[in-house]
Length: 220
Ligand SMILES: [Mg+2]
Image (tube, rainbow, N blue to C red; front, side, top):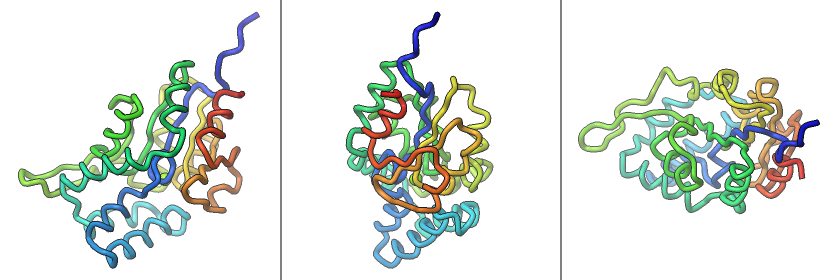
């Protein structure tokens, strides 16, 4: 006879933008370039997150429009921390104490994601995001075009290769998160910041807070 593990899911895969944190990073960066830019970029983001446009069609275009600088990305990292979902820090801490693995899986810029990862106690090995390069004076010159995370199905590709204990639950608000259904053992649509019917449809769980999510992860 074996003891029941202190969790129902052994690994939690968290999206960051509009899930762990209350902003869309690229839209927030665009807003620093003015209202018009924010409108143009956020429209593309929303259409990609609803699944109306492939992410690969908007990924490079949005960055080319916004042209973020190193200082913008640093500020974005701080904004991620400032907008972290209520209860998320406590939930992640509790899960990890019980032996649940937590990873961040994001199509956003790795530099900024690492900051919020560190804030919730995760290291670089627990972060999957997109690398970028800056020139000597801080202009973003390139992003990792080979990263699967710049495509609609990239999160699924990464989850399928993850060597972490199962069962795994993936959590997110967008179509790229929903694409992991069938690869992760469960998908939870997170509606705490944005609610998209096309993403919630067919999700194993729909949660609007980290408290609700925590109850599912731990099987309370
Ligand atoms: Mg998201």
